[in-house]
Image 1 (cartoon, rainbow, N blue to C red):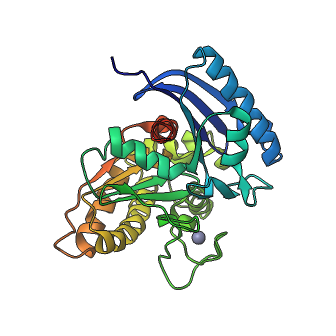
Image 2 (cartoon, rainbow, N blue to C red):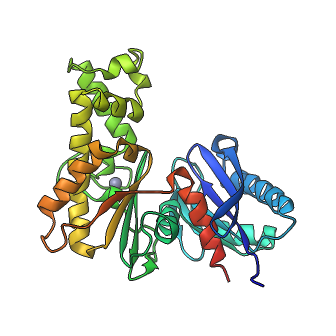
Length: 318
Ligand SMILES: [Zn+2]
């Protein structure tokens, strides 16, 4: 009889920490904690993770083989040393893997969250069956992950496949990464909303203010999507411009790697064809013609991709 392997996947996000007990690719139990409760220091987050993981192990009757954890920051793999953690203070070369492993008495693997989303989409999602895959996530941050020749690509120093920090021009706004004119500064959640608000303030006619109850700070990406459906020009133009910038950067990635498929996920990808059409058109127009036809498809696993990827990573633990 085949041994039943259960693992725990953890996805640490900016607002929520998701934990799941996973068997194969099935999530048996899931739990969500507020990141805010544990965000004051790495020690506090560690304590919260240990408590939550132990209670999931108890619920599983102790039968858990390993734990995988996705962190929204720079992680040295396989050592599991967290160099930075997005929007959380105090994360400076924290040996998270070693500490958790010691306290839990179980194998623990720690990786970047977008790498784990890439792993999940590649193994069981929209990237299934290909050898070379580019995954991209569009949200507050703009991230990327590469599968090259059937292996999830990782660098020695931490940053890898940082599509959001590829510059789209020579001059432009400064970025927290130290660069300038990074893609994320134009198509990240904050940048998109700021640009919509400023155009409305300039007097550009739009249905978006009405959808937001005339409170511009309440505008969400979903309202822009809704306005697109209603024929709003500003809304359509917003995704058109974002799509062209994303497409320009992806055409460079396509020329460099010639992936078999590109998968795009994250909250902003819900815009659907309003965003995907200009991305595809730009890649077709700007990448080398032999590789410009690469399929560009939406991610399949939604917001649980990170958790599933973390559990899959744990399944690889020796
Ligand atoms: Zn940057």
